[in-house]
Image 1: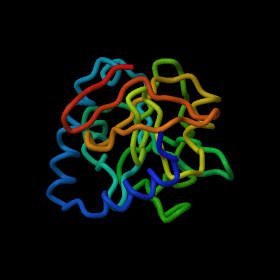
Image 2: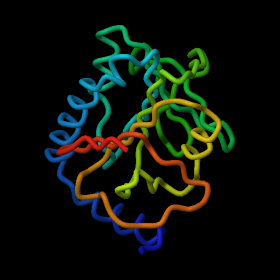
Image 3: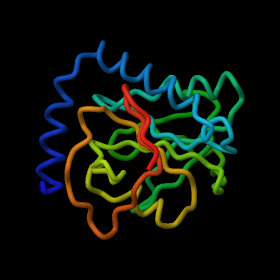
Length: 183
């Protein structure tokens, strides 16, 4: 088994080599697969990270929600917790913690239920659905406190072998540019 910090570092370095064309194509494939899922269609609210740099692009998911009227919320780092706020357009975002765009204060806090779909970022996943994020534990703490459908998006070649920590919470579904895994 690989040590999570080593795995994180290796995949972050590899991800920085991705061309913008590859990222856009992968983002398009993943977005199309996500918006076709029953869990997305039936969600009362979609929670989704705002992608930056070499992360899997999520702008198409936001655009779909804006156009279709589906409620979508983006995360805000509040101390050591994540809260999600509804947004109606990208203009509702401002630069926040870690220079990540997040909803401004005027945006209403999202309600979360068992029918809420949370699209979560990761550096990589294992085949059981555990994720390696950026090492701060925001999503694991959020999932431990909130019942919702947990959907991980990422790159197929970033499914790897590692042992989760005791506080890690696995996702229910992983969507990559090539495959949908239900766990």
